Amino acid sequence: MTEKIYEKQSFINEYRTEVSDCIIEDGKVYIKLKESIFFPEEGGQYSDTGSITGNGKTVNVLKGEILGSPTEGETDIRYLVDDSIEPGMEVLCKLDWDIRFDRMQNHSGEHIISGLVHSRFGYNNVGFHLSDDEPVTLAFDGILTQDQIDEIERDANRIIYMNLAISDSYPSKEELVNITYRSKIDIKAQVRLITIGDEKNLVDICACCAPHVKQTGQIGIIKIISSMKFKGGTQLSILCGRRALEYICHNLDNLKEIAKGFSTHPDNVPAIVSNLKEENLTLNAKVADLTESMIIEKIKSGEYGCLVFTDMDLSASNMKNIYNALTDLKEGYVGLFVGNDDEGYRYYAGGKDMDAKILSEKMRENIGAKGGGSSEMIQGKTDSSKEKIEKFWESIS
Image (cartoon, rainbow, N blue to C red; front, side, top):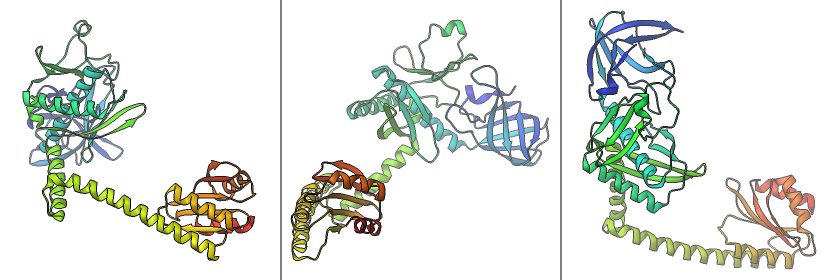
């Protein structure tokens, strides 16, 4: 069995050891090592990569794979490499350290967030994914409010400032019975516990197979960048360490550019944007009212038949007024369709002395319309094109 150096000494990034086996399988080359600093893909975290050099030859470690069941018993590891290397050879292993350290920062940060959520609100982490390109995602089996999320972020960073120890332990089954710890699965094999803090400042104890930083201060910073409801609970997206700093700097740069465009201080941007939003809503409402008046005049002058199409963003009130004008001045079924072929159309439809529910059934069957209403008027949405709607209307005229 490979001795897992990465479990107890996560900051070793170079190590001399021996190649214990080299296997060719389905055209791929795998090796085993006597001892290994390369963490394999396991527990929601990607495999380490790096290089192995021996006797003047260097091969690249592409991926590590667990052999056996981590939950049932002892496991071994094999590594996918890009070339063969002779068994028995002494080699120098080198980690892609920047990648490993980034992952450790984010994984240790995840433990802090999950531990705080569990201790404060009793929710369990039921899903975890650590990507190199996207934020870390954590899914909890309970609803968190924004105030609670803000509280968790503040306390998580306070724990970083305290620079508490992060340690691993391997308790016996007898000892484990008396330890309260988090675990997503039932582990029959030896349990490895990651503890953040000490008896005086205990943050979290969790079963975990991955490498972690040694002190919370090495995480640097934790930023919760978004939250959403997910399967009856809450999913958080977080960034830690270097990635959190890059995210904050990127957003600050954007804010400075926006402030520069307004010739103001960044602190004034939210108020300016809020005012612009209000002004835009007012202008849009005025444009919608003018569009309503123009369309009604065209209905009166006979420029429109029983169908009206417009891509202007009309309110429900605008649409109702135009529909009433159609039913007052036109015979048979009439319809107002607001939108475009790419995004679909909102509609009001029906007719004076006509049963709109019958029209609703025909629209559902022929143009995939969704919605409802009464015998006087129906409303809803359809993704059909203008041409298809017009052909359908011709068929019912």
